Length: 353
Ligand SMILES: NC(=O)c1ccc[n+]([C@@H]2O[C@H](COP(=O)([O-])OP(=O)(O)OC[C@H]3O[C@@H](n4cnc5c(N)ncnc54)[C@H](O)[C@@H]3O)[C@@H](O)[C@H]2O)c1
View 1 (cartoon, rainbow, N blue to C red):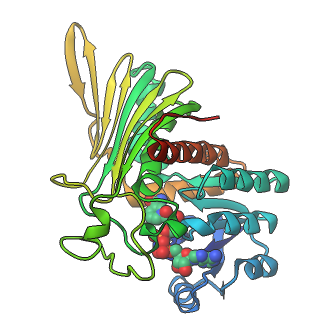
View 2 (cartoon, rainbow, N blue to C red):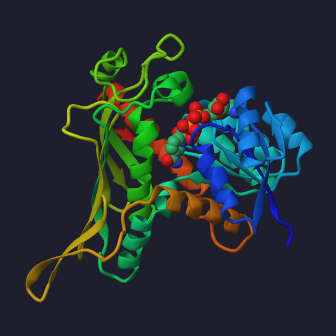
View 3 (cartoon, rainbow, N blue to C red):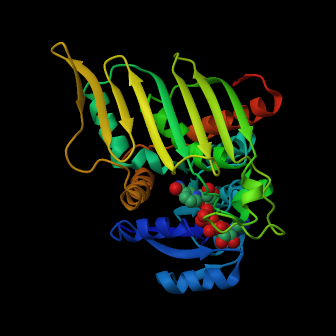
């Protein structure tokens, strides 16, 4: 079998996880080209990973190469354009999360996939974590029952990634669109991908812009001239789904809490589940309340999950397995994000169509 030819668009931080994911399955694919608007960066990247050709324009890359797969790893505002260029150029695409700046852009990306008959996967890496697999194993064994409520937290005390992440023109928003997407999607996935019907949200910017000037900010956020801090620093939301499932979300770049904290809690008719560093199950058995945890490590494993995500994408392209994080899932998520931002600005609950 001929190996799939892969290209990378955007050679920054997270693209390394994609390239390493492809390199972990050399029998199926090879990375033959990479592209970044920053020439120095893309040259170094190509040399570091032994990628034969590099480009500074993704149109040129698509015109010169015959690529089967493309990873889009640019900042958020370039996701739509690069994804559509890659799909129209004949490749299947995995685009990093958030899929786009808003649901309208996500729709246009899905339309490009449909008209080209290509796969568009979204980088919802949490779907590929061993914690998600463990929960699904218990759910599929009938232990959880129907999941009717969930709480998802992705909270940083002082963790704005800086750079373009804090600049709405490039990111589309703050911790909601950057961190919240991961855990909203994870909870929705584990609850069976129900359709969202409405959202009520509150967003704040009390701490971030001040901490960006120094103080105890742990992450570099100093380039305020190039990238102002004009996104929210904390968001809280309640999302309703058509099957009655509700999800409560909290996400922050800056919040006065003792330490960073990430957790997803799922509440089912037969058991509750807590996902943080491990997976725990709360149920009752033989007239007793029982708390259980599987042996071994079941928490989220960053490298393992990225490798599973990229292998999942390649196998979906090869027709060996269904895609586990579709463009449609990405678009549903963007509808939720849009509704939370609109709700936060108007102070009312927003219906999701
Ligand atoms: N799945 C995860 O856990 C995870 C983690 C971090 C980041 N991300 C996502 O990955 C994406 C990239 O984040 P990052 O931290 O790697 O950012 P980064 O700033 O390190 O890299 C982004 C790169 O994209 C390049 N770029 C921008 N526009 C381009 C274009 N039109 N063509 C080619 N290159 C272009 C930039 O020059 C930069 O090198 C973001 O969407 C982010 O939300 C996902």
